[in-house]
Length: 420
Ligand code: AMP
Ligand code: GLY
Image 1: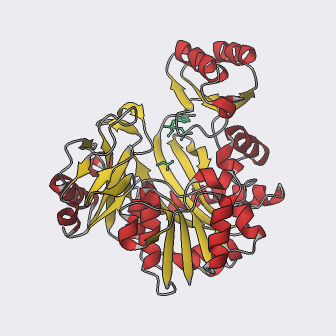
Image 2 (image 1 turned 180 degrees about the vertical axis):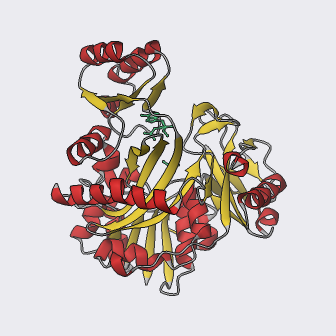
């Protein structure tokens, strides 16, 4: 089989690396990929959806795996399907589960899926009045995709009111044409993944991310600074409850609405005192959750991806190793705000030879014989161990052996799990 992975991040590196281990696969391409992905599979520069379809036809690609949400929301899976190409990833309509927070909240309300109480607003006046009535803490969300910056968890009424002005002021463009204002939930957060073919759903594992940039969960939100799997809070009973009350009802709802969801459903969950509740859906794998999950996965990923696209998920067996895996993200100093590009990263090869370690690349490129950083999140240093503590030790040993003065990472990834 020939597989094409779409994307350029650490998530896509982890997917391509794992797919490469499948005995079913003969050749793997990644478009556009990055320096690290190019060490494992073949990178190809494809600019548009038209280019991707043409390449998949010419190369007789058996499966396209779409990593990021952008191309899904823009209809890449639809274009591929229309051209008879098998694709892992939802249609544009189904990807609204990530593309529109209001859409997802309305699905939850209609089908009784546990989530924070909410209202939708299309202009500032009524939104401001609602906030004044509800008081703080309260959460304000731009409806559309806003690169992870469209959610304001307001601890004061002033912050919430300011968020309304920012969003309706046009900061997020079309993504801010409407807002969701919702109840503030308290609890531990979990990233929960399920595979679905539009009818059946099976669990694919869970992980815990560290969203804030600084140690001790301080500073601004990021795309994710580190993960570990398994999440100790996800007992067997809890996992069954999430499948029962959140995932399966969503899959049935999407089918009933005439937009069956196929692919991976990534549920961001809040484990509240009154049970697990949905914070939001993503229509893709998590980044950096995938780096940890792919290293821990024991069974072949490819049949599961194919089954999501073609059906037959009921016959798929997903198995993870008993070991724990932890991923530390190394980012360019200044991230998630402005940062320098083009700085040289050294000693990556030495770090990669350490036991139980795999270094996934995100924003990297080749220049003059060196690997340079070209993005905010740059490396996902991922390690396994018999316990989270051991995985943590292995990961930080590799981090400390990388020579990149312009990079940084959180030093406390996994701390909460270790304490438990
Ligand atoms: P999202 O982009 O929807 O994942 O939101 C980003 C982050 O905001 C989440 O990971 C949570 O930490 C936080 N958040 C979102 N919605 C809520 C909520 N209703 N209550 C508390 N925190 C929230
Ligand atoms: N790590 C969170 C996400 O992928 O959205």
